[in-house]
Amino acid sequence: MALRRGHSLIQSVLRTKLATKINACTSVLPTRSYFNTNLEGIKALNPNKYEKIVKTNLHLDGSPNEIATRPQFVQIYDSAEQALLDIKSDSTLLVGGFGVCGIPETLINALAKRPDVSGLTVVSNNAGLDNVGLGVLLQNKQIKRMISSYVGENKEFERQYLSGELEVQLIPQGTLAEKCRAGGAGIPAFYTPTGVNTLIHEGGQPIKYDPVDKSVEIPSDTKESRVFKGMNYVLEESITGDYALIKAWKADKAGNIIFRKTANNFNEPMAKAANITIAEVEEIVEIGELDPNFVHLPGIYVDRIVKSDTEEKRIEKRVLKKEPVAASAKKSDSIREKIARRAAIEFKNGMYANLGIGMPMLAASYIPQGTHVILQSENGLLGLGPYPTESEIDADLINAGKETVTISPGGAFFSSSESFAMIRGGHVHLTMLGAMQVSKNGDLANWMIPGKMVKGMGGAMDLVGSGRSRVVVLMEHAAKNGDHKILNECTLPLTGSRCVDLIITEKCVFEVNKEDGLTLIEIAEGVQIADILSSTGCEFKISENLKPMLQA
Image (cartoon, rainbow, N blue to C red; front, side, top):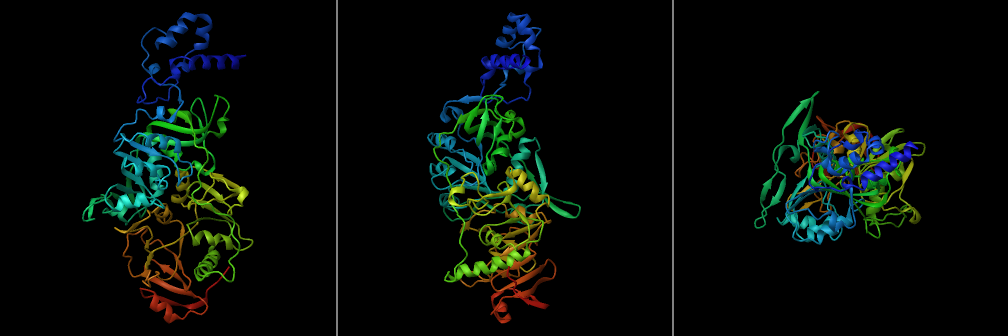
């Protein structure tokens, strides 16, 4: 009986002005003020007083109740265009998604229909594809500055940046997620080990190129650093925005949100850091239909809801289970396989490991039998499984390379901010990734060639920056043009300083000592030491126990 009365009360309140956002820019208070009063009793004993309180927003004593005039429940819109109506030029937008997984495509497309809204600063992990997601706003020239971690496969994003048409502030992926999480939590700044002794720390990263002479017109600033327990940390300021555009699976009419699989990613931290959060959802249900135990984002963070009208979820990289490499496979495949098979020896039973795109992911195919390793993917997945069959493909289940994957039994999904808490906190034991260059003391460069190519650092800086994970680099020994990739010092912008522990190439394996340099510990079949000397751009020692290159 009491439950029915409570439900009736909620429905009555929802039918009043309480269910309407009085001012779209008004900040949300956590106080549900009417539920702090005995409205049920007042309604039963004094209906006239009840009507006066609800309709005139007065305290019980008749005095004005300013809190009560503020929005109390999420507003549900019939169209994305209506939900975005008050977004103006020069706004800062926080946009969820990872690649094209979990992007609020309906909201973005609606904003693209308003070319009068321009000069936007957009904070997002990346910018979709050329004609998908934020790529549409880039095509329309509605964005002035992108704050991202990864340019990726969006050629228009890269073109506008290198030509000086677009300002781009590249931030390590984990730092970006934490900036938003901290902004939503009211924390103005924090220290992180990510990016120490790189352009992120020292400044000078190109934010904007001059359109004429391609010189750096706007460089990044030097950041404050501090030593804690003998380790350097960089001070990062948090991020907040005017609006957050997020994508979710389900929402109830109180604004509680549930995400689906890896489509959580940046949506959760972005939602918490904006003045107004607009959620595009696949399904809207009544209050009480969502189990509170499974709510990812409480309604206090959500202001507006609109139903998604996207007919089909996009898949950026549809990858299926692969057959073993055939004997007739091209040479590059056999080289990759040789490196991946050696890398698989580094997996130890009980490890948590993070694998980069390409050869590192291939190494997972050769994990020795009986060795149990749990793979972590920084887009919000623990327990990464093999590539799917055609029937298993799910647009909401991808790895950090945007490839379709599966999840292993016992796995879990979570947000990007939670993912990088695992990484920075030292809970990931092993990191494997590729490189453009590695120095003899373990410096790593793998994210940009200034003025020519920029893919962004993604999560690499976070993965190698914690100082608590063993870092193994997998790469071909020399560049395609024959240039050395293993050097005395990296000539490209660093991803991490003195962070690499092991280098595996098709020719050999080097152990890295941060002070004493490289030691050759394994050599591939058919390779001579003279060959390694000529193809390596720095001196190295040769182990007294030099072994043939191992293969899993």
